[in-house]
Image (cartoon, rainbow, N blue to C red; front, side, top):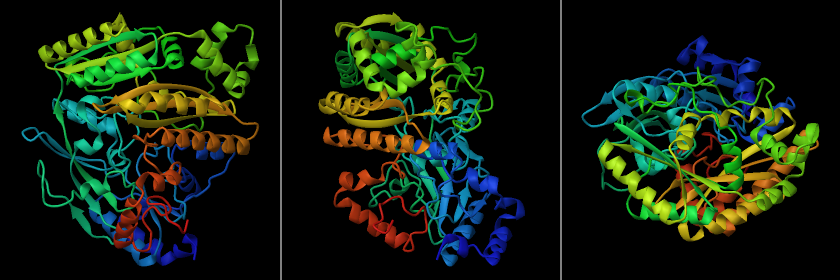
Length: 546
């Protein structure tokens, strides 16, 4: 029986009795908006007017009790349910592959409590990350979690997808910041984790919910560890002759026990693209001490733009196009087609041109310790052959660090597509991981990369690529081939295929190989909590029936 036949008038009336008439919608526009997140494959399809999996109804709860009653109604009616946060995910995790009910959490957006004494903040799962950070800043605190989707992703989405932020080397990833969770289980019961700094009372069940992408329950409330706003933030940038010595410098910095807040190493092409915009940030754009955790207030950032690729105005050629034009004048109107369809040639040209790699480091905290760490890191970089560029390149990066996420629209408007993939490996494998994945992508797309989210045992690599297909269907097939080749290469190099974007539909096929026998444990847990596979069906764990 299809989900459409399960959504009866009686069930609609029951849902309306829970959330009110203004708390649900079956309008076509609302269903279309809930049919996808920002996964590139679905963006390609949407550009040609296709919505692969629209829900049957969208529901906006306001309380945990409403969520519990809606979940119970879905369980009784065997209606599939998918949780929707900000829709900024890039892996298709929020796509309702079996239709059903889309539970949009954005009306549950209250900051409920701040404990300055315990450094804990309790917040509803639908609050936007930037709103949460700004509320903390007003109390002299910071979350320390700054993913690129900060302006439009919800804090519940951060947890559900196991996200990382730009300052993860200092503050940790989302799993390090979650102190407690409230979750509505698939049968409608409400479970709340015990709040303590640490507990040895068996497995940590809240960790099962972190990264489960809504397949084991609905996260309704989060208790996060927060920090005082840092009194100082220090910036420094370096040029290295190649990726390898720069990576070694980063490794040695972490080996010495230093904790830079931001670590961003760009490969040669990404350095060229990043360095094209030499403009300094406008006056006041860099963070002031009293608001050092907040994102800069820059033109175009007001209101928290969504990284949606629909309806954006035409824009000037991108930075890569400017780079190619600067080195190869005369390409004119053929620039975009050559730049994306002739990607292998351009990747080789970049290698021939050579160039340097840019490393950005920031340190923050109390002025004395932060300054000492920054000075020691500078010594390690210079002893590794770096050129000290001073503070301005790093300050420019800080002021514009969210911009790249909102500059993909022109690529799609020109009939092409762009995507990012984040992989990771230990230090002994990360160089090989970079070479293999770059080569796999570079056979069919323009590709560049930066290294970030650095740890004592390894780091993540964030690849950005762009390509074009003759038709939307050809573009879709090309996209899927590139991703499959790249993730195959990551696996062969001994790396993980997903560092912080999650799994969703985009990477589901690689999960079994990564988990091995643990996949059976996960499936058993799913059967125990959600025997009818109603919570975000067809996602995690991979179901043999889908």
